[in-house]
Image (cartoon, rainbow, N blue to C red; front, top):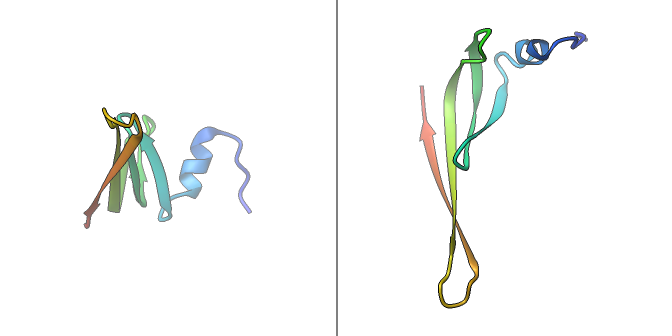
Length: 74
């Protein structure tokens, strides 16, 4: 088993694996890591993007959670 001594070691071990990336704006990506660089720019394949939005009902003040899921095949 490989030893993780630096943060990029974990990324290196994740090549050709499905990873989860949490982005700004309530966006999440899940896809297979194909490549990366020293700036952590990543190339993913077979990506599923999930966008979550929360709205407040003006009458009941309940939270309404909406999710949109997009599949990007490569």
